[in-house]
Length: 173
Image 1: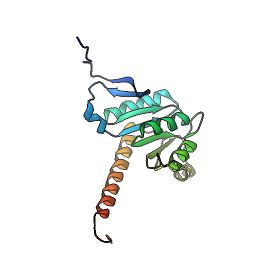
Image 2: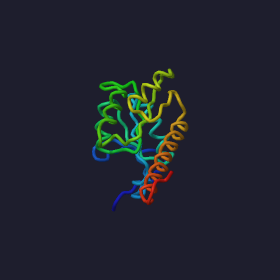
Image 3: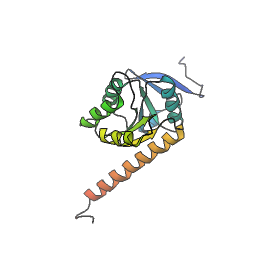
Image 4: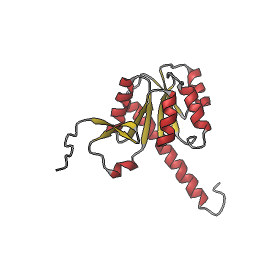
C-alpha cells in the first residue's frame, strides 16, 4: 500500500521545483493560498529559526543563502515577501534588492531588510536600495511575523483601494 506520513511535530525539508523548502507534513492544496516568504540569510541556523517560526505562523517558506540565490529563487517562485539579510556572500542584500526592484517581474515584491547594524544611515540606505521595511537583528521571530503581517495587510488594503477607485465613475477626492 501507499505510505503516508503521520508525524506532525515539525518541519520537513523537501524540494519544490528543485528549490529546498520547509513544508508542514499536514499541508494540503488549500495551503498554496498561504503567503510565500523567501528567507535570505547566510547563516543556516538563522534561516531555519525564521523559516520554522514563519511556517508555524501560517506562511509557506523558501530559503536562500546568498544574494545570487535570492535572485534565482525570487524569479522562480515570485514570493509575496522577502526577508533579506543585507550582509551576504557572493552578492550582498543591498545589490540583490536593487536588482529585484529594477526588474519588472519582481519589483512589486515586498522586501524587509534584516541587518545587525542599527545605524540610522543603514535604514535610509536600505530604503534607497528599494527595501520596503527595515528590521534590526537580533529580533524575536514574532516581531518579524508581525512586520510581515502588517506589510501584507497594508498591501491588501492598498490594492483593494486601487481596485475600488478603478470601479468608480469619478475622482475619489
